Image (cartoon, rainbow, N blue to C red; front, top):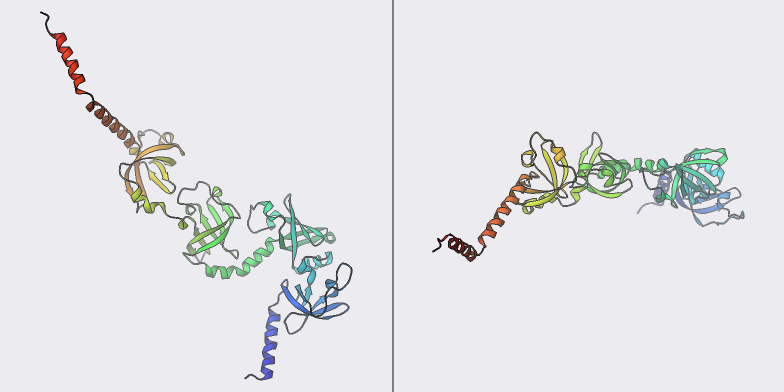
Length: 389
């Protein structure tokens, strides 16, 4: 059984550890243990109490609205020397002087996004109005302005001028700090083959950058978005979209992460061998035209090639003029190699197939003609040729 001195030491050690873990800008709970004329003492679980100005505990009429034993929520505004708290900063009810202190101490403040204005947003912090530039409202670019209106966020004051009449704030600065703090942990959790949720941070011609948390981003290349051809990544995803992706490759040295989206859907080529047969007549859409022939989409994710020799276009002619992207054409399947993800198609075989159908139709029509009809015609011809008596 531990001695009382050991228990006291353990309790003091735990209290000191808790005190050390408190950082500036942190919101903590505490219990008021004493109220004086200028300040009050708050027990926050550390070896010594924290101090808070008595003005922070008064209502609009100047009366102290708390008593000893009450629990309050406050923000740590200083850890130098003594632990100093601010209740109004935590409640978003700071005065102009306190906002100036928060600016110099780089403390976060709470504000409500009132409305979108030219170039950014009007933000109300306590009784003060502030401006948040469009680029500073989020880490994701090109988000819909209206989606932030009415939201309450934490901001950092990046400019404080004219006694508080000109305040500029940034939410992005706080988000990036939070991301950097957790980036190392996030990277540990990302492994090849993992399926994780993320948010589209930006979209480029070649694909989209996806935020996987902690500021860690991966590239979702346009070729990995869908099994079918995606001509424009911006038509498929947009900044701010929440999506689930698969980690395809990791390059630890370059800190590059390659992502895939189509891998979470069934591969249409897995059933191609049973779907497409030799000699089958199909209708498809021209997706691109190369010098050696056009590519034809038979279904989303399945494309076949019409070789120049099967296109019906003379070698000296321009195949790109004969086939236009978006055209619907009929083709005949010549060969299917599902393992190699290749299908060979023919346009000339379509005409041959039509001709064969016409021959079969003509033959069937001829064979079904009544024999007596031809016989009666022959009899009449013979009668007509008989010499008259």
